[in-house]
Image 1 (cartoon, rainbow, N blue to C red):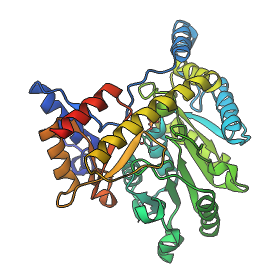
Image 2 (cartoon, rainbow, N blue to C red):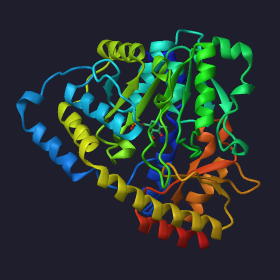
Image 3 (cartoon, protein in one colour):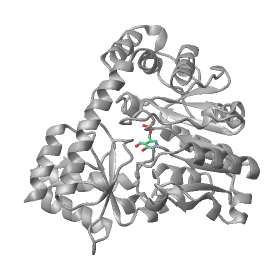
Length: 383
Ligand SMILES: Cc1ncc(COP(=O)(O)O)c(C=O)c1O
């Protein structure tokens, strides 16, 4: 008998696996399932990015091991992007590294900071890989609630002093998955000043920064002094509908970037060069794509919200991300509601409790699917 590690035996399965398993069961029964659960999109990546990938893949020079922190051309494109989008000037050599997506970054950064028994502060509910990354490194996440009364921003003053002193870093994610909450300038300043006072690193996950309706999302790196302790993860997954490409970058404090690259070199791999070519192309050439993407999501968002309103479902929506965070009807847990949605309406949603205790009482619906699926969902909900 092979003997698996205690950690893999005791790990709970990745939460979204549960959702996928339920979906697979219904598809097997021949039922058309409408999937508002998964955080993926029905849009295609920019055509020019796909062409750049194809061209680079045809060149055998690109078929080999390459730089762990990414090719200079990719890091330079990321620096141009950061300056154009956020007015932040970065050194592409020292302050940027390519990543195989943010999920990779979250695991790498936790091993850069966390030893056994250490803690990191995480506003909850949260993207599950954050907690797994911290626990895999031997630490634990101290969750602070993000609640509707504060626009889903955490109240930093409520963190106990002993936790503030012990924490190695704080993870933040605005625009937020799942609540959609966004960061305002006042919160950003307060966060940075607490981080300076308690010597935290700040890990800011900007996976949804470009998915907004009207007002752009700010980067913490826009604040004076942030470059000393902040890194941001910028993913091309949601920005350019490139979820399968596996590409993003980390930007910010040179010391943290260097630690990430060290860990990547020891334990990880670099991003396939043609994928970097596609990512660089998108960042440098695809502003029109973003305009069209926002228009598409705006229509879908309006449609989903009107379906919820017609059916008496309350929701919160900041206008950013491609989710609506909605209240589970009274008397049901979020898991019970998810079961009812699939059994009665053939629709997958994400129960809030899969994203942590603070998510109970809520569910997440993703509207990045095809518009026709949302229309069909509206019809099914009325039955
Ligand atoms: C908050 C958040 N961070 C990171 C990711 C993963 O990003 P990537 O595809 O770049 O690994 C997701 C994906 O759903 C997410 O919701």
